[in-house]
Length: 106
Image 1 (cartoon, rainbow, N blue to C red):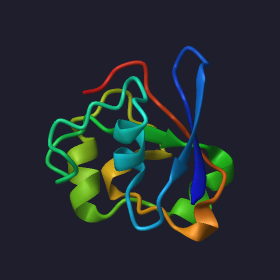
Image 2: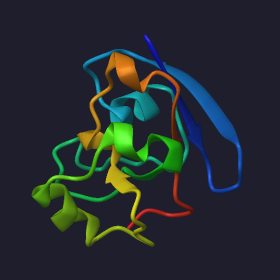
Image 3: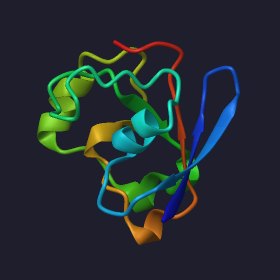
Image 4: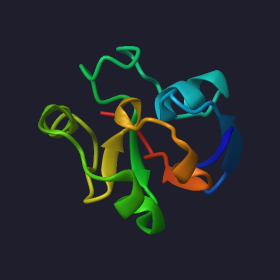
């Protein structure tokens, strides 16, 4: 299991255990993390699972695909570390990952 910490816009932390091979979005939904809505269920057809990858983890997670970049155009307050959590696969080397949930979704 891989530890992922979600930090809400108000600073509240949610420390979760994620199954390798799942997505960060699935982990958020299964753990009831507020602010990750995931209307499309992980199909990369909305931007309601938008998160900010913590700067310390940005390189390890990597950047968005072209399709994901297109969907991020619909997200609120996009930043250089913005990602759709449905597109981040959980893997062993992401143990300790920290992501920040925006104050609202697009």
